[in-house]
Image (tube, rainbow, N blue to C red):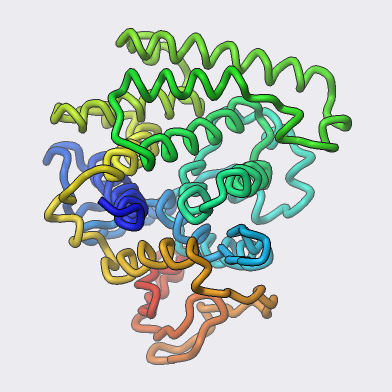
Amino acid sequence: MSIDQKLKNCFIMTIYGDALGFAYENNPVDGFELKPFKHELREGLTLNQPLGQWSDLTELLLIQTKSLRDIKENNRVTVDYLRLADELRYWLYYRHGSPQQIIAKVKEGEAFQKSGIYWQDRRGYGLSRILSIILANKNNSSGIQELYKQILFLNRHPQVLITALLFARLVNLLLDASAELQQLIEGLKLYLMGLKLQELEGEGLGILPQKYLIQFEREKIDYLMALDRAIKGELEWLDLREWDSMRVLITALHYYNCLQEAVELCPNPVEGGYHREAIAIAHGLWGINLKELPVDNCRLKDWGFINSMGDYIVRIRDYEIDKKAYENTRFLDAFQLPVGQTLKHPILNHIRVVGKEERGPYTIVEIAGKTGSYTFVK
């Protein structure tokens, strides 16, 4: 299988896994499959969701992908943070989920990085968004620098940083060759033992508090112990652990192995929101060396756009896009647009307002566009 196909498979299957997990957590009675369901989009506002609907995890991944720039002369695909900031401003209104940390970052801006949650949150919700950075960078060193910077955009906890780096290592190991679970974990352990914070932080290491440096080393040790347990098949301890980023990644490894061995996934629906990212990551890893994708993957919502974004990852990796830097524009309030209005949106491209309604305290605007369909809620 070509490297281009592996990249695209990984991208699409991550979204497929998210859609499966999202449908399951909202309607576990019908089993683990793509299906329409009802979802409480906001407090007190439940809406019908179409077949193949994905969650905010995919929304964040797509936003991250759309914010990439290929800079051939630097041998790097980087993140356009001005574009990302505007993408996230609009995302607040169409999101399928309520990740408080990310919402706080969007609303507070740079001030958020002085908050306790920025330094103390161990979950790192939405870290799967960095997949596009991993896949788009041929140069591994450049990719690591970019994903590290992106994680720091939302989170400073050492465990989340380590989880993101191990996730990147997993993807790269599987892009090189198909591997059994034990080989993958051994590869992660070897990488982790050689991981040095100084190489990641550079000159910035000197301004970090000493207790942070100690915490980083402790998290490495905890991770090595967790990986040792995982390689022995010991998973019971996970049920006693909070849903932090380590639990998500170890669970994703377990789910990946289940998919490889054709063992049915049976996550606890009560913990659906926590399992969903592990399910998405597991499917993405599985998809890398999968010769034939599930026949229903084309039933994902906005399939044409999802498929084109998979191709976009391949093209931007080869520096074929030559994307220009984003120029900030004024915020365009979709709620002020009349039904039937068509225009070129600064972020969503060509769009058309196809519906508007008031439901209780909420205003709902339906938008159809080149990049898919959106339900804006205020």
